[in-house]
Image (cartoon, rainbow, N blue to C red; front, side, top):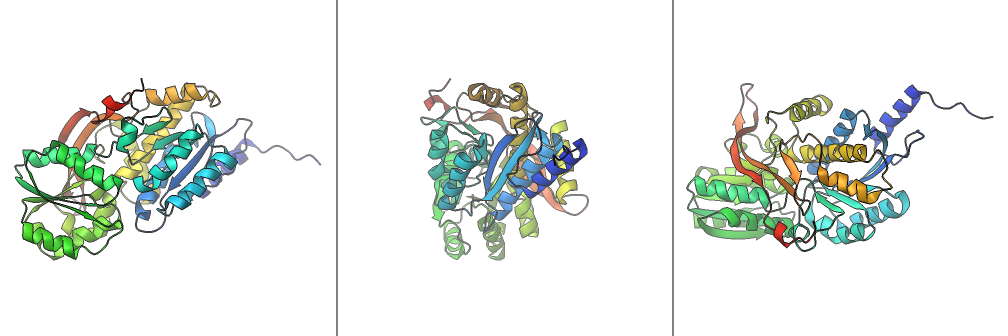
Length: 398
């Protein structure tokens, strides 16, 4: 016997269930869905960051009415385990089995860089919601690669400029020894005019910083700038405070090492920390107010940069799908629509440069205690206006 077609209300319920469960199950519709592979870190030390990515992206889809550009969404969320081999398997499945329209979500550059060539060779669009590797900003720029967040040097460079303006003559630098860490310290040095008193590279995933703290005590810098994502940064700040070193030197960080997840995990030692970001929860624009209020309501916590970047990525997709009238088979037109970036970003002013990396403002935030007694980042100024990355001139793409 032929079954009756699902009612509109039934289809809506199925769509919501598919989104919440993050299963790659096509939503009942006569229209082909937008097929998305969201690969991010959901276990281990970096899991807090991947959870923010997933939740920010989901919220944007909900705010877009459960669709993107008017099309239903078929999305599979996969844990990359912060492991390139696990990521490679997921990428292969996204491309060959699921035939996704685009892939997004990877947090760490040491996971993305080994698999990105395979994605691009398959002619699949990749939207980077976090890392922005130097080589893909320059000579290896590609029409299928979009850095939605920043180039790896951008935010640390803002901190270098800030450190110069604050008059810190000698600054010590600490980051993990992987591409994102090395580029972060290069970024700081690009706009810092003082003396680098010490430059230390820790192991990726390191949690005991006793040797680094002993070195800081010996060097006695005016300030320390660190980029230590996830649990690394949490432990570093706690140990720095326990050793009393935060009373002997200023503590500076990029936004992703001084974000709300770290504030929740560390508590009081975060008070007063300056950190740079292209986004702040208290930025005064309509899109951001809706995002922050919606995130708090949905998840019971303040969002981070990672959630904001993922939310913007989903809204970018929404605008591009709408621009091409849902005709995702016209891949050139879809990429062109993505590059136009005709959406209201939560960060305010945003556009893609010729290399498909952002041109955007970068702000200074400080961890302060609010009227409610809770610690949170507060916007304290703009450090770089309409900032473009340092490598765009090396890109031959128009």
